[in-house]
Image (cartoon, rainbow, N blue to C red; front, side):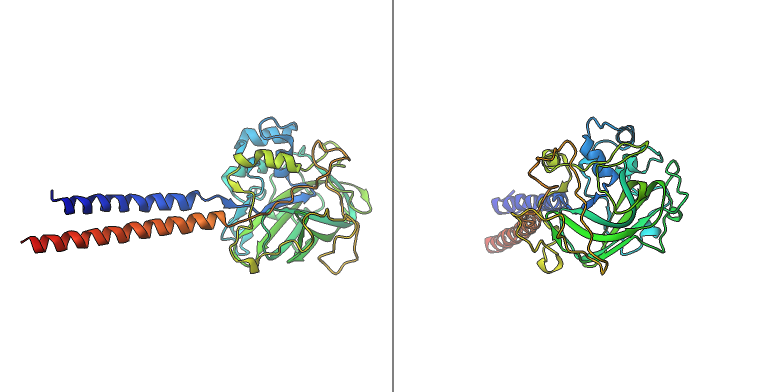
Length: 348
């Protein structure tokens, strides 16, 4: 084979090989992190706090047995990318806590012993732990009176006509979206179902938080559960950082290249947020914010639950680099081919 044709053939093979390589790089870019309910603590966050490899509660051990440990390392990734408000259409009964995602199926187990946060009827300050701020609306629903926690969770179990909290575009501060709501009279074990529907994308996020109504009055916050179920507790920042390398979810970035669609913290990130001065996201009277307690963290712990953030450009740089690589290979192939063809003609 003439040298020019051989060069052209080699370049063609190289360029063809680079295309799937580029596509592989695109698909390998980590998914952007987003979040889960921090107070009342979500099931997935609770089980992560216990330790994915050796959870302490019977419910979390059963969840790992059913779905594996990866779901817990991916605690902030229970989502549907094209939800666009079609939550009931896309998520069947019995699959609400996993958002119909097979990875998280262990969270759908119907059992009455999920660790629970103690709450009471009246004002409650919700804290949604966010690792990628986006504009959108949060809605939190409570199960109806008579809810049976030992049965599979169905849409009909939720009081969808009366959300206990609604907040649009709250400001992220100290790693949390904080907004207030009102819990009605209930007794015993109940469940709070949170939906965060982005307005800058059809993507939505979901979480289940088990709660125990211990009486009337303001919510007492995570870690104070009573009753037959163990007390719920949130993961510490150290726990999340330690497990980040095992997560398939990006833990440092906004997950959105357009800064205008984020609601980044407006306070000094080096300053701890005040538990009593968090602005309410609704028109209700301000209430004292609950203090989520990290699992294994004493009162002397100097850190709040993970204040994540950082540069979210890495996935986009990878995408851009792969595209440039593939385009360059194609141009090089074309150039060598033209030279080879031209040389052949002059040689006749």
